[in-house]
Length: 493
Image (tube, rainbow, N blue to C red; front, side, top):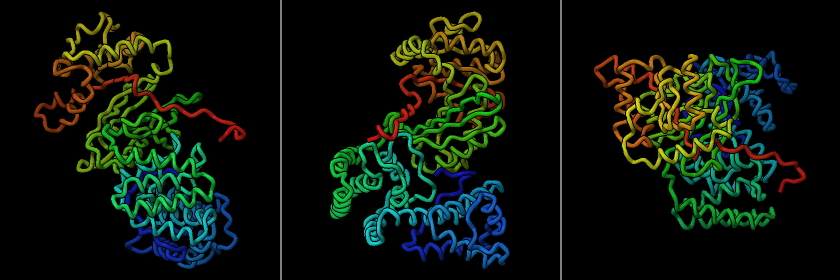
């Protein structure tokens, strides 16, 4: 389940080992104190009632302290009840604009443990915990392991999965892989592959071997073991890639579906992790981008640079995407964003793909600096065999839209413009410098470097010019991850 609302700081969960310990911790977190403010308990109960939660064992008229004890006892009886209370906590926190309460993470952990007890007995769970809990894996590496052991386009991990033990419990609830291997067994194999101790590797693999034999998936386990060994011998060399796609609603012009993916740039689109779709009003787009990037900037905190692609329809193509990214993290934590716009209109028109790929290949093969902008545009903005087009008007007015669509139809993979004034001498001078500094294939990194330099310039005019620069950079070799085809239950492996 993905998180709702603005994410709070990620913390390492203390991983209580028993239901009793989890209940004790949860009760402490829910009791309102001056040092630990939580949403009003009675408000939570009202929300649960409105959501049709079965609260027949809870006295809604009880004082808050007794009500907390009753709620804790109530939610500790099933995973669905723990999730219902966690949903209520997150909803109230999101409505109030506060960070996610610590109790929500404890409830998710409690829910995972309760669900795990329906799949494995307590003795097996205790053995698994003793094997997994001592292992330490940096958070970005943990998500990389999980990404490798889940089906393509799976939803990302919830925030409480910050170490191997909560992650292992949560994976017991995920769907099996196409070959029938439970994700938990795949995760333990990948975890074993990155251990430096041969004793730890042997213990983890012995456990998976026994379970795979018991569950009849030994062949799939051995195939997974080979893949895990390959992953352990490689390190991701590409820039992490975040993809945000805004799909227009069929009925309302101000409503969009935000679809997100994330992954390492060098792993291919098939291993991308997909986030949960969200309906976003035009007025709330900046906040939706803030929430999504804030979460993943923390999880990819070891990366110096993160590539962010905004796949936009024509109506949104001139929105301030750089400003959305600039506000997503405090300056001391912010990575270097490489932000580009991608064209949904081009993607949805297969007849335009041949000239697009031809010009992209030409752009990548050209090692010389680009030609001046005047040689790259026709008299009315229509490109003349151009790999890079510089618009004469912003694409949110009629003339700019015509120029942009003409460039896309002609196959130009790179399109530059200023969001407000494409004709200003300052903008044209900046573009000239960008083009003359080196090959066009390095243009996104040069634009990013220019944007990151904002704040150290003496000229306010130059700073305003740089803030308005937008780059549409359509790489045909970096498509959107493909959605898997639906398969009838009778045809599933």
